[in-house]
Amino acid sequence: MNRSLIVPLILKDWYFQRATLTILLVGGIVSIGLTLLGGILGVVGIFSTAMATVVLGLVLPQMTVVNERKQHNETFMMSLPVTPLEYAAAKILANVSMFLVVWLAIFFALAYEVLGSHHSGFLPPATVGAFAIFVGFITNLCFAIVVRSEKLWILTMTMTNLAYGLVWVALYRTPNLGKQAFGPVAVWSKDILLLLGLEFLVLTIVLALGAYGQARKTSFLST
Image (cartoon, rainbow, N blue to C red):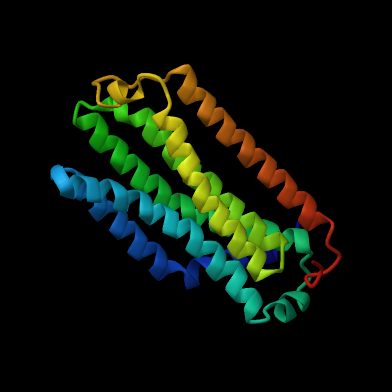
């Protein structure tokens, strides 16, 4: 792997997305602050916190992969001694590192608030929801890298957003979750662990298919 070129490609994406990362990080932290107020503002804060990471998971693949392709950056990439698989590795490392900075900061801030409020029961379902957003982000990213069609990527992005609803339905149907979520102790039940396991399985499959699809390409213009 050509590390001498992959690292600059990663830093390039960081440089161009620094404003987006800052805005969403600040927005997420402010949203968590709203949850402390309780009532309607608390509900708005929880919703806004989730939306900050969801938007990040949509914006990063679009800005770093889809938009760059629309600007015909393949010509520049073909002038570098970088294979399609190395290009994909650089994009994944750049996007995942950027996403994790914001995602982990928001998640740990939320976890700190939950644990400090003596409502630790909310932590398990919050973890399932947060990890679902991460899996959705990886799905959008891998599909954007492998598939050249913007329309297909938009369809995938739409399906990913709809899949979040299935996660909340699964949480809603989890026995005794409502009582446990507002309790003082975090309960990592079999149902919660099963949902986390399924999310991890989906993540593994998406990464494997993405690596396979990109490895089969012989050039940056391959479909």
